[in-house]
Image (cartoon, rainbow, N blue to C red):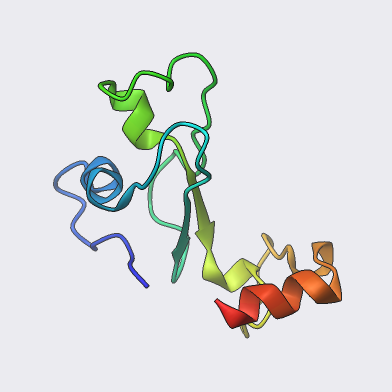
Length: 96
């Protein structure tokens, strides 16, 4: 499991995604973070702009998910989406 570094002096989102992004544009990249990072961009799925691998937007494509909003977490917040999952989905998430 990986997470964004706590250093806000550089564009850590881009550095993180450049290092850990896998696959092509059709690959769903999910980044589970201990808490939502201090950035304005949490999801960045852009359709046409992200197709070219050599673009900044391609690197940003993916979804950052606060681990405190998923099944099995103990922290409750206003962004609590745990009730959105079926029991089968919860079992698969816990097995990851």
